[in-house]
Length: 450
Ligand code: ADP
Ligand code: ASP
Ligand code: MG
Image (cartoon, rainbow, N blue to C red):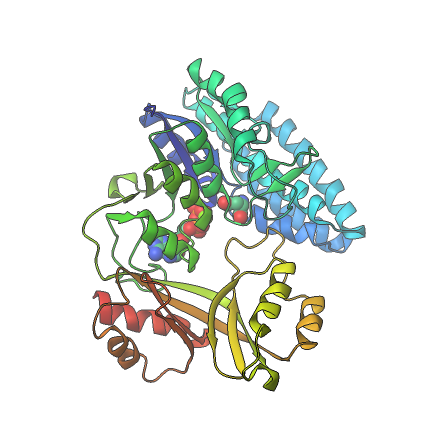
């Protein structure tokens, strides 16, 4: 293990000039941070996704102007922005031509190429911000390191190739004493095309780079001072968790705690790399350390919320005493690359929610017409939307007495559409109406954590 840290700054931490300066100062203050992984400035990726999905010329011009203004607002505060402005203008021109192409015919490959521009621009500007603070940094195109498959929108890294590239491209720079600034979220397919790791994927990029560099830790700098007992935007009484395990953090991320992308924990767990989460605006407030086996392991750790859930209820009298029905259903879902999240079954019906974690960059709908047609050939299909999944995360929940009573007592006035309890020792999930979701989180938080 080296003494090197990989630091990642999310969208709000590079949203504007003062945020970039605060982030740059964090980098400068820590001599161990030799690799900096950046997201696009807040809002930029959403605008680029809009362009990639195709818009009419008038709307297109407005959206491009919005992106330009976000980046120009930062350039305007630099002492000498001439050279970098030319480079940003080149990216903006590129965005314009790609957006025009997307309006004619959009494609997943084109989408990834287009939305990669957000990270390219923020990372270029950040090098300049560092330079004006007397800190020399080397800008690196991360696609020369992060190799992925060709699954545009939610690509999987090729670990071996990425390791090889890191050894040949990234390590020599670090060994020469360079501070490397690069992009999160993006990679390169074998064809040479740009790919993305799914929305929020910069956390994952940072953990991957930490792994191939054998780093001592990954520092995730964001807009909250750590991981809280629930999203502090929903429950202001949420408390920061000082240390938690990889398993707990992975559960939280999977069930919607956006503060970490779920895949971030894969390399961290695999290579036992501690992950720190802190606020780039207020680093002095401290943060959360996620490690392999911290103590204590409380029964109740946190509450996570995942909005926009789709509930599929599949029913068929043929299910009665039949064999192979679920196998058929799962085969169809697998064919459409859909993973099931929670599931309950009865004699003639099965209800399941679909996993949208780390959703594809384009935000495309999970339930395609082809999928519904195939399922309808097998059984009756009912689709319910407007639902949210509230997950209680903890330890040994399956053997803790009285948990269900406390949960259902607290939720007695809410319509609980589905529950999933018993399969995992680390979570209990309830599906509720989206309009109730925030209140359900607050009520459970008050009962279990306050
Ligand atoms: P970044 O752009 O830095 O990646 P994100 O917006 O993706 O930041 O993640 C940070 C946000 O995660 C916070 O602003 C907060 O609203 C949300 N969040 C959700 N659950 C939690 C939690 N349990 N603890 C802290 N933040 C949470
Ligand atoms: N910019 C990308 C997104 O908004 C990746 C990230 O921020 O992690 O999803
Ligand atoms: Mg994020």
